[in-house]
Length: 224
Image 1 (tube, rainbow, N blue to C red):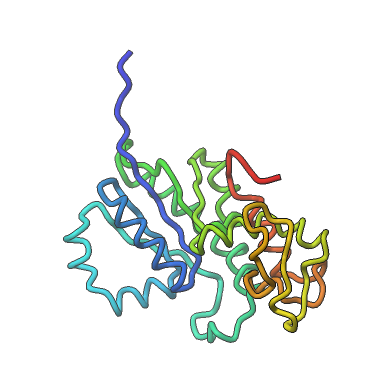
Image 2 (image 1 turned 120 degrees about the vertical axis):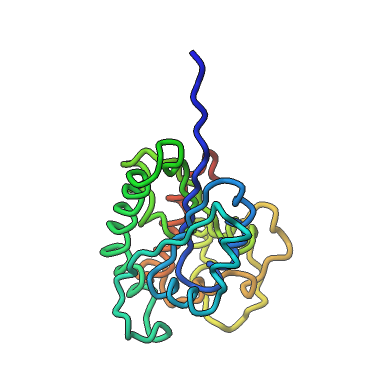
């Protein structure tokens, strides 16, 4: 029996900060020969509409569309005054069900061959996308928008904690860090992500969050 061809439809979901949105947008443009849906929060979508010539952009990429979901944060709140926990808790409560509903609506409003076939999400949004993609049976890929070295370090956070390298105070930033394969003899405290500079590792929300999100990423192979 001949298989029917399914045109790819990629849905991209960046973490709602400019430093994460730009790399995800660059990836989206590379994929724009397929159907692409780029999802921002409502707040960032409004900024995009005010600062981008959407008509010109869509003329360049006719298979590209923008959508938005609520972040769960009040529209008038100053984003710079929020903690990471504020953002993550709001997104889990509000953005997660909104993203699920949006994926379902994309499947209902388009032809069979244009339904979402893949989700590419920021690697620190597994708490939002992993359960939804499994439920709707849409393959999920994750993208960490920082460099690959940081991703490798994050995978070794538990070992760094076990060996006593994390947490560490701001002094002695040139102290060598051992225990990460490939980074022997040159990694220092100052080269570690800022999330390592905490008083305690057990009770620090952001550090534990990044560890959880790193190991939740859907990878076929993970470091020991």
